[in-house]
Image (cartoon, rainbow, N blue to C red; front, side, top):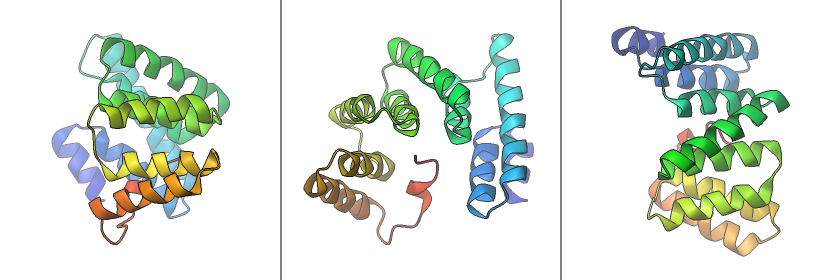
Length: 164
């Protein structure tokens, strides 16, 4: 309910994205998917009108959805976003999309690019750790996990949300 109230007050789809993730973690995949569909509709409509909808919001929803058509679109949108605005967030979302689709090496390149830009957030290190594990490098995976733990002591759980 708090997420809904925050969205109603701000019209920021971020709250709905987080609400869908919370519902999914709680096992309510039906309502999580309904909220993702709502967010997707809002963002696509804003983008079509040249409004304030941001492609990265759509990328997040598509990656969270996780099916092949959604991931393919997410990768394409995130690539375009990185071309236009090569920010840490753009590269992180592209890395998430690649990782969720099983493309570990391209995901690794993007997360390393994110970190090379000087971006330091627990969720970036968390993804880097997961990718290093997938690549078979447990020492580097542990290093990144320690860095994430330093930034988010006690592993509050927020950094895992939306991770592949």
